[in-house]
Length: 151
Image 1 (cartoon, rainbow, N blue to C red):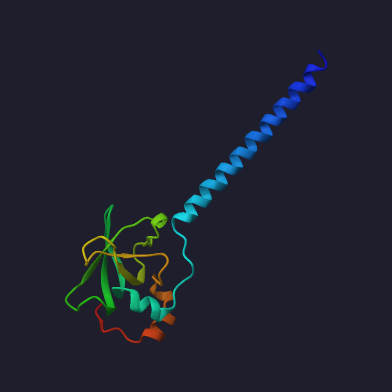
Image 2 (cartoon, one colour):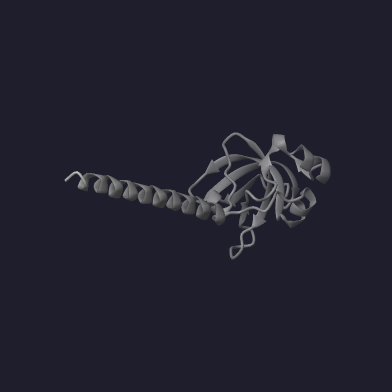
């Protein structure tokens, strides 16, 4: 009987180590898969992103729904006419590289056409230069004055 006790402890210890290893491996796999869903190479250069974007403007979140974000536009460099007071962006999850907007924050937005959708359907990516307007001074220096300002 004394010999069986060390064997049980050894078996329980082995099972615990294997279970722990499996949990760590499963967690690492899940984190790697989440990161792989949206992997940005690096923040694009100002001119490159400006040229590729369908619209570049400064806006603040006016309203939100499950699938869209409506931004009130105050300054525009391209893609937003003076008559347009709002721009509607398709909401995409950060897992799909979608930019997450916070209420009451002014953003400099580089918006892109959504592939496979209507030409006017736009979205903003976390892989673009979209950022709070307060952090976009370098962008402003490079791309210059907006075509129009209306706050």
